Image 1 (cartoon, helix red, strand yellow):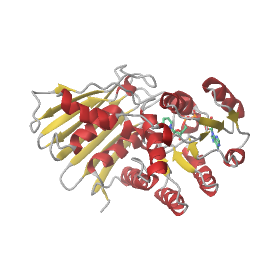
Image 2 (cartoon, helix red, strand yellow):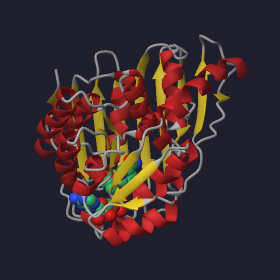
Image 3 (cartoon, rainbow, N blue to C red):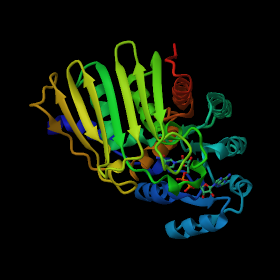
Length: 358
Ligand SMILES: NC(=O)c1ccc[n+]([C@@H]2O[C@H](COP(=O)([O-])OP(=O)(O)OC[C@H]3O[C@@H](n4cnc5c(N)ncnc54)[C@H](O)[C@@H]3O)[C@@H](O)[C@H]2O)c1
């Protein structure tokens, strides 16, 4: 198995060749930049030349903590810096389109945080803008680079469990929504801000569903006004998927489990990050394959974490696209489909109807 696992770990490796490293500037000095983007970029040897935020004190504090040489007084000042080649946007979704448009107009490549946009129309407009300008735009759906998920994806690609017939993911956690004041008033919360990662992953494994059905709930005493638990189900031509997420777990037993079943085996694992957010632990991953074959369930040794390591992957794929003309694993164009899927799930919730996507 060790020899076979080498092909998996090669696929999951998160290294950015020196020749591909370009100067990056960051818009937004919030928790995710401080706790995940910048630690990841330091591990990968990337050069962050400057940062800005509407809260300049916050930008200064983050710059000092991570040794960033320049704090720009405004977005305009950042975009006028000819040294900057990539703009890394990490602000609330409502603020993102205007920054994205300005960065494209200034000729910068972009990595945009998720949610890329809150409507398919805006997502499409932004993806079109980047393509027309000949610039690379990626979306920070970095769960596609989390080692447990990426390894599972490679095992599926290599045919270890045969054609996938079922994907399920169940998350039961106590999320401190108080950390994000801007999230308190969001009517579309859980899927838009959190589970969009899982829905993006379902697409990555199974492609586009033919129809979806979703339900949402709230819990008495919860901090935000939006939904904090969702159940989403998908129908594909030859497969089904379900994503069930609860953010108000008052039992103290956080869990985050996924399972992928195929005609020749199955993969099961856990998302370590969610057992103790934002520190977490490495994922677990096991595979049972009748085609390799394995001798029962075999553990794959995950060594890297969703936070911060996977953030090397999303920026790395944007840099690789700039250098080689490849398509980022999570491109803006691809993410338009994820935003469309999110919209379909909310439409299903609002109407209590199955939504067809064919
Ligand atoms: N796994 C992930 O990829 C992940 C995890 C957490 C958050 N996020 C996303 O990242 C974004 C930021 O989240 P966060 O947790 O850092 O939030 P945060 O509230 O900690 O920080 C947001 C920062 O953006 C700044 N800001 C707001 N509007 C701005 C503007 N117009 N120009 C410049 N700065 C502006 C705020 O002052 C604040 O410092 C959100 O879109 C969120 O959904 C992604």
